[in-house]
Amino acid sequence: MTKRAVFTDGALKPVGPYSQAVVSDSLVFISGQLGMNQEKMTLGETVEDQTLLALQSMERILSEAGGCMDDVIKTTVLLSDMNDFAAVNKVYSQFFNEPYPARAAFQVSKLPLNAMIEIEAVAKLKER
Image 1 (cartoon, rainbow, N blue to C red):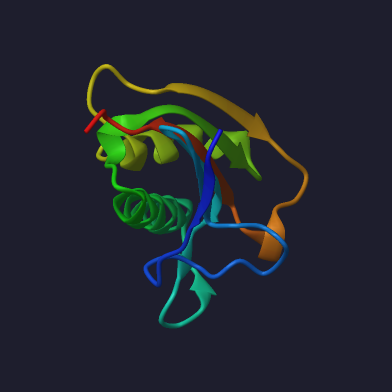
Image 2 (image 1 turned 90 degrees about the horizontal axis):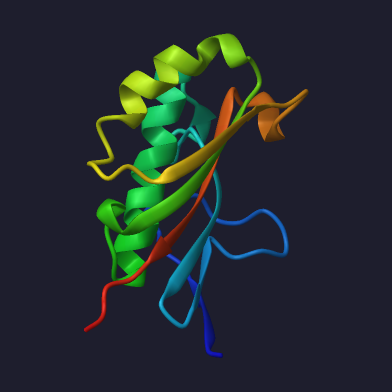
């Protein structure tokens, strides 16, 4: 098994002992992404803004790893309020094509920085 960390300036720098993503063989494990504006270092104002920013970071990480959003096979969505699920789906659907990734969604009591959403993913890189 090979394992390498992925880092891009296009996503938030880790604030702890973890990588933005890790590639193991052809699988990419993307750490949870918050909806932060990297230039201002502030969370998006709405759950839609945060979802967009989180997925844009994920897209940049995947690109750095050699993949794209179509390579995502599973996501986990963590929400501070499950009532935001429909709003999240509107933005989420702009980033994925059929067949859509498998997905789990959970409401949690608190996310880092009091974010409204955090999204992690697993992707499988195409054979070269």
